Amino acid sequence: MMEYNSDDLIAALATVRGRSAIAVIRTSGFGCVDAIAKIFSRPKVLVNSEGNRVCHGWLLRDDSEKIDEVLLTVFRGPLSYTGEDSVEISCHGGLVISDVIMNLLRSIGFRDAAPGEFSFRAFFNGKMDLTQAEAVREIIEARTDRGRALALSRLGGSVRLLINAVLDGLKKQAAIASLALDYPEDEVERIDFDLDEIRFCRESLERLVGTWRTGRLYQEGIKVTLAGPVNAGKSSLFNLFLREERSIVTEKPGTTRDWVEAWVNHDGIPMLLIDTAGLRTDVTDAVEMEGIRRTRELIASSDLVVALADGAAGHSRLREFEQLGLEVEDGRLIRVWNKVDLAPDAPPGWIGVSAKTGVGFSDLITEISFRAAGATPERNAPVINSARQRTLLLRAIKALDNFRVDMGIPIDLLAEDLHEALDALGELVGAVKRTDVLDLVFSNFCVGK
Image (cartoon, rainbow, N blue to C red; front, side, top):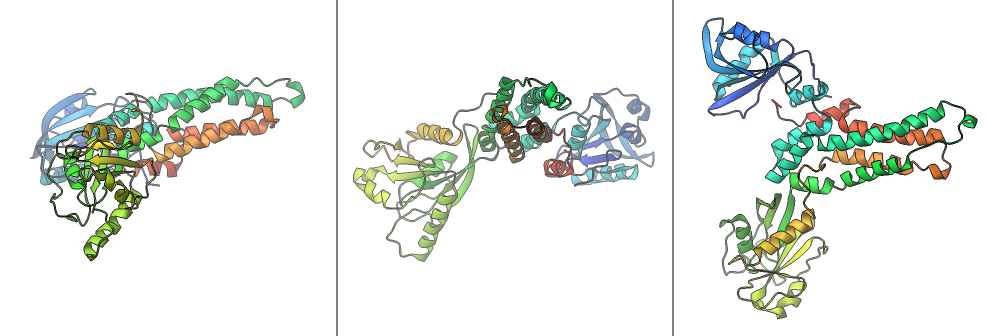
């Protein structure tokens, strides 16, 4: 477990290290305002500043040498990100000045913050639970605006509110079980568990678990491989997705020997799109054979495979297409009848597209989005994308599945099932502060967050 000493004064560069107009250095800890006042040209103004106020002045070395003209933003605990007094230093950008200021802060008692330490202090001081702490990192790492919005909803407490409601319900039932255990069995005629409430709690957790695939999709994206015979138009379709000429397009078969990939964003879903070597059976060139082998590996590892057929060749070529051996489950395979501007209508089960003119492209995007995500979650709906959260939710659900009052199970075992569910949910939001859990959540944060 990473050591976070909450008594230390900590500092870190909160903006990207490099050339910029400004840089921001974040500090936090009890006494940080008084400490920074010692190197500030207007110490009394800073010390007496209220929270959420900006002070203009100079940072000084040895009480006289000016280091930089800065703005100091003061935050007073508990109304701050970390829940403790904090000062953010806005200085001129550049490697030299930020390094000089960091060294100056070290000289007056600050140490470098560990990755995620500011967010850890926010969690430790009750400013957020673990689901919200994870959402902080997810906002930073979001690839699309939709992914950002879902993470922001978690930061706003959508998951926490649902879990807290379930916790409240289960605590009531655990209290009933505890009361029954406090009395001899022959004095208790009936144990009045609210089975409807327990069922409601379980169903709430089941629905939340069901959002995991969608949450991961919008945060991490999917791998979509374009595959099919040579000259089917895979590279043209790849360029249409990107709205630029990335892949080489020629009439000569086998132009694409290796794969070309790029990230694209459609309907808020980040997609790693891959253009591959064309598939055919009559290959003698060793380089092209290796390209085909790699194509088949990519097909096997992709979330979705968009299989293109050359529609201009007519329906008679469908049998040849099927002989290419695209062994993909129907749930992952999307059949595209390309070159509809030159071809007959697409066969049943195929999407007609012209990679050259863009006809049918919106239908293809709609199908990809539906296959990948299904129904789009409502804004501010609770959605999870953390494997840790999913594992703990499944553990709580399993415990509630074991809670069966109609099976003659002893009350002490029923109580244990309820407490197992409570422990799992407590660990999910951070009520159970196990060091290995905290390390998992905060160690992957960037420094300064």
